Amino acid sequence: MSAPSRPRALAICGPTAVGKSAIALDVASALDGEIVNADSRQIYRDLTVGTGVPSPQALASMPHHLFQFVDPCERYSAGAYVRDAAAVMDAIDSRSRRPIVVGGTGLYIEALGGTMPMDRRAADDDVRTRVRVEAAVHAHETLHEWLGVMAPGEAKRVPSNDRYRTLRALESVLSGRARDGSPEPSVPLVTRPLVIVALDLDSAVLAERIAARARAMFEDGIVDEALAVSRRCPDAPALTGLGYAEALAWSRGEMTRAEAIASTIQRTLRFAKRQRTWFRRMDTALRVDASDARAATDAIVSMARESNSRA
Image (cartoon, rainbow, N blue to C red; front, top):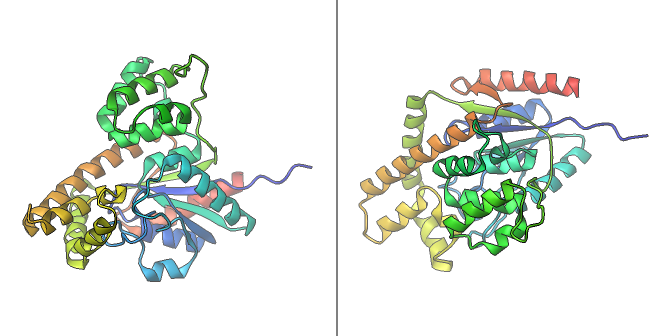
């Protein structure tokens, strides 16, 4: 006799400062859930102020997983995230609770869920055009991580900072050919069906929240965090996060405090724009306006319960 099917896990995503953490906490409380991080910066230890990690009170209120568990000096890949998140979610299932995946890293969520934007059919069905379009939207680091999820062998052969070879390798893999000419499957490491909710806000409101968050980061000690990590490992991947480069530049006298804050705001606005573009392309995601957190929570809980009843 086959085991009963488990309900699809819920994933709540959206751009930075949209209010994901607070809404997810209320959703998890209503659904007897546990929160699983899907933010590529909140995974790092010792970086709290600039990454928007949930408050100590929120973390203590219910189980939270995959927050601040990676040394900031280390690199962490999308493939590693899929393996770690799948293991955590299996454990949550074993407790008869519901995994609530929360974060702003679309690559993590879609790799975990078994869908990848670059696997979607483009209008002209031309692989080279597809790769060029994706390269215009996403950072090089994201493109190389995609390659690592779809074709780990190819990714190991291509230097992580070699943009040209990364794009050519993606074209090859998406065409079904590995470097040695043999087929290499373009599938994620793990498929874990997800019900995806994409939160969003009016652009002007989101911009105000981003500006307020950036100013608060500099008030709350992001410079001290950045300096502590940089002393231990100056090239730490985690220090590429929003605000940390500016904090270090200010500490070296390369920027004034006002310039550092302004740069952080502008970089975050550009980042949020890329996030919104990504999430809008998630064709099956439920779109929820986050301007009213209570209404957003109610809509997500209702949708999740309906989805569970159909599973």
